[in-house]
Length: 187
Image (cartoon, rainbow, N blue to C red; front, side):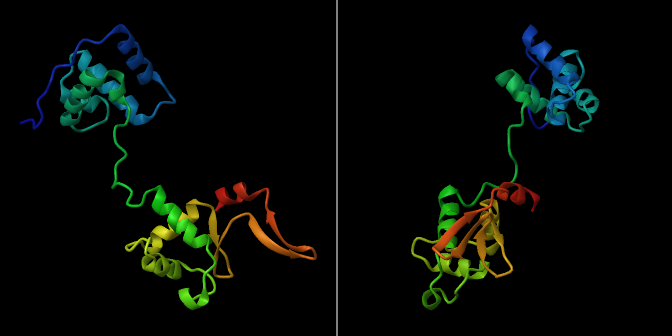
């Protein structure tokens, strides 16, 4: 027995019918969107929900019933993916910026216990700080640093890819590598 009530599909407008047929024939549309369009068209032509699911390469008549209910309510927008899946991100943009601010700060050997940052020392500093993140993991710190363009160097510290401080006769100079973006993408 079905767990969700099965609503009949409302009559399609000519625009909706054409859009569904175009989507089904499309070679560049996402496969899940094409499958949903096939299911709705099959139900329009009188197929059962089970047959519509099988015709689109799916197994669940329940999924077709939910799709029909969404299509009745939202129209063609029901074909698009409606969820991202997975758990919600634990750390928002503000927390990620806090991690980056700590990584950009030069560590104090007396207070931080290190002269250069590692993931463990960054984690310890972030957990101890009054405005820090008490449950942050080294994995999260590494992901945030990597996504922001930082790479682990052989000198055992994190630094921003494509930027370096060089000593010159006139003093220290910040040097930027013009190919930094290409190098980030190849990692």
